Image (tube, rainbow, N blue to C red; front, side):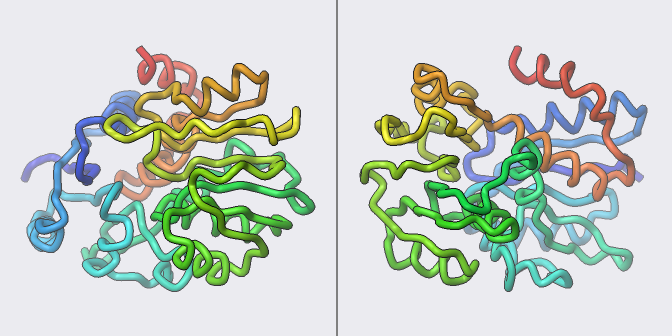
Length: 270
């Protein structure tokens, strides 16, 4: 029997740093296993899951753009993720071998900013895809006062605010930013191969936090502009490593050595 493995699937996928993260943890813990990146186009998604179901060595996969919503159609959903966040980023084998979908993005997103008190604050979020859904779900759970959603499709954006029970408004991508305490880029804008997201940050207060979920490149135009204004920033590696840690435990049954995060970050940014 081949050694157990997990993987990340997406289209594109070459930019993914997930294999570096999971292989680092596998080596650190001395676990016999592998983690790989697999290019899966939308028309191959159903076939991918059919093939992996039949492979006993497959422990699961992380799911990235553009499959976070569509993958729900091919896996079990006992945690009712579809009715909640509405998107998955992790698939793991249940006790009976059935692939089960879940979402570790929300916890991964929230972990670096868990100390913030946003109950009475205004937050701006860019995007309406799977990552944005996880962000909005987390913001709803902590009772954020008001969310301004920057979206290409205003109807879709308004629907998401209603779905998550958030008070707020929807504005175009190029609209001026509100005076938000937290700005989150939960879109692909700024990622390699996509146009940058570089808004005027002047409306943000001096104590605002700018959080970009994009990690390729790590220093996006948005983060560069925020640093130029001396604003506090969180880069995409924070969420990437946070969500990966939860997925790793589901795949391989062991907690990753988070005490070695500094070493891992150095590897990822080399």
